[in-house]
Amino acid sequence: MLYFSEIVNKKVYTEDNIRIGYLEDLIFLVAENPIVTKIVIRDKSNQRLIISTDYLQKINKILTIEKEFLITYLEENELYLVKNLLDKQIIDLKGNKIVRVNDVALQDKEKLSIAGVDVGVLGIFRRLRIGADNFYKIASFFHFKLTSQFLSWADIQPLELIRGNVKLRKKEEKLEKIRPEDLADYLEKTNVINARKFLKILDTEKAAEVIGNLNINYQTALFKNFHIDKAAKLISFLDPDEAVDVLLTLSKKKREEVLEKLSPKIKDQIIHLLDLSKEPIGGLLTTEYLTVGPDDTVRQVIEKIKNETKDFSSLYCIYVVNKENQLTGVVSLQEILREDLDMPLYKFMTQNLIVIHLTTPVEIAMKKFLKYHLSSLPVTNQEKRLEGIVNFDDITNYVLDRIK
Picture 1 (tube, rainbow, N blue to C red):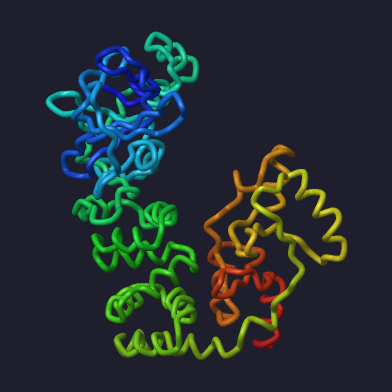
Picture 2: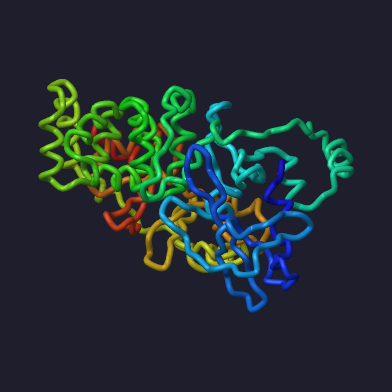
């Protein structure tokens, strides 16, 4: 068996011994039998050349191609190995878990094809060019077990392969065994179109569990694109609190259409919670919070805390926003103090945030505080921009005043 790490960066020559460049990547056809259709060469002038494997003569210490080769292009249902598979998270359908691709195994028979992936430590060692003799020395020192962790192509589901007309393999019975929160984390690393394709192969209840573990911005994006019947079916499986949070981000017309499709019992529960949203969270909003950029270092953040929070009554965490002022992450003070001073925030910030909106009922906001053990909740608008935050102390006092 041949591994991609063993041939990447190898020199490429024509059959008459003219050097073209070096191998940068492979292109494969996404199918039950993923054949490698093209090789990607970086030539001497740093240009990228895509050449059909029909011109590939042999793979040895170097790669040899025919001298009268032609340049071609990426076609439908073809993907780059490095960009779309290597180092990506995939679903191990055999082990019912999310794993990372450390190397790709190739079969060089009649046609070069992808046999599977290596998700173990050996794949990392191979990529680092550590000789086989040294594998076991390093493994012994760190008490690693160097068992093979090879997964065949039939036993994986790479999310990155959901492009164009590429179909996900129907493996519902295996996907059902994977925890919904793991699948949600997996989906949040892709776009909404890919996520919708993925959710289609799950049964409705499992899909609803996964959606329930997505952040509210992702939930909203999904539901805005769902047909009314599909949205209503999924809403009926969501926790009523989560269902209301999603419905409140939809247009009034679509919200009413979805409600009409629900069973009377679920509809009554949700309407009750929707009525509570007439008591908006806006009155509890505070602008006493600190925002920083994802590229800011711990040192810069500490300096901002010293200079900009002198008049704050409390500071539980720091919110990370992008150039459009959209909320992208959060870090706690404890995390700030633990990291190196020159570490940028994007390397350790939490990206899967729990948020609320100005329309979120106080009761639901309170439940989120208690469910996730939070000290503050960011309030965002439809454009994901930060409107302010609500602190646990403030909402607790508000609720206590109401029940006295």
